[in-house]
Image 1 (cartoon, protein in one colour):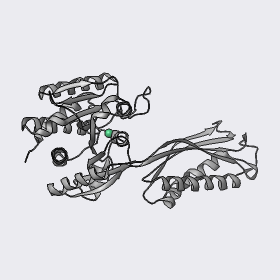
Image 2 (cartoon, rainbow, N blue to C red; image 1 turned 30 degrees about the vertical axis):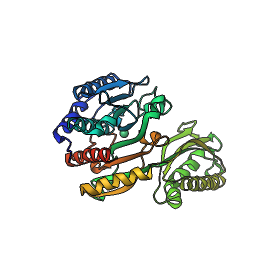
Image 3 (tube, protein in one colour; image 1 turned 60 degrees about the vertical axis):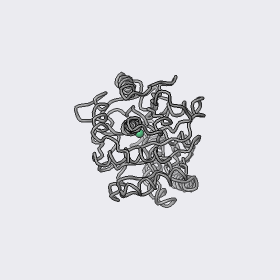
Image 4 (spheres, rainbow, N blue to C red; image 1 turned 180 degrees about the vertical axis):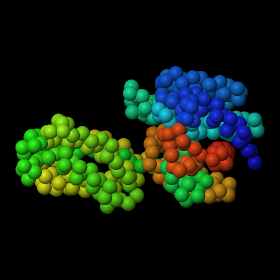
Length: 374
Ligand SMILES: [Zn+2]
């Protein structure tokens, strides 16, 4: 049985965390920043030190493969950019595990090394003001010629939520990524003097918006107990202490594993906004801002990963991811699946992001086993 080197993997994670490293243990490695570019150079160097060939495409994705290896390739990796004040594992863990797998297979003279390619995608997070909204490198990759040489994609990642830790799972096979819909809810009432207008004569758009906001959680739960909803933007106009708001706008984001749940939730949201508007003498308009369809990963590849988990004898289950990943983009084009390790206390996109070493090592070993047996 071919074993990865735990020490080398953990040392690489520590080394990469120094790029954009913060005193609080987090990293500032937003795509395109000096720290991000230096980290990509370092990664290319580590690939070369392993006796492999590092190369980059036009967008800035960094790849590594065995010299003389020939496609078609099984691709494995993730991203090395971070959000501002992010953690050291999000993305980085998947890239460095893929590197460790390639390095280990090469040292062992295993034929799987000849057809494994690793990748760090450019700008997954979309954290820079100039970013195209994230998933930039994987999206560009999927419209390029190299995609035709890829047989499948595997992404190892931290869970970024508390479900695995709560269920005492070491590993999870990710079957897909939730769909994400965003709606703008605009309530229009009547701007008037906040002192002289009687309370029963107001068309207060701020109050109407608040009544919509406070009900969003119940609306989502009624549509699908597994879905999540958020109101992250609230705007009240004109925005003065002595003026009754004549307009108010909320942005509601919904995430669910199926289109049916998203649509059912939107229907309930519209009905509730209309009822509240009637009662508050306002007008409600609910508009779609964006729709990201759910991603369903390859069933055969998911079964394969589950077998690997079983063989390792670890606690495991299947999950759906509520966060977006490069795998969601790749999964529309090639057989794709993901493997999760737990996030301590469910913390992510923060300096306190952590996964016990034992599980980091387990995840990397599972990735190697999956590559070898595929
Ligand atoms: Zn990530």
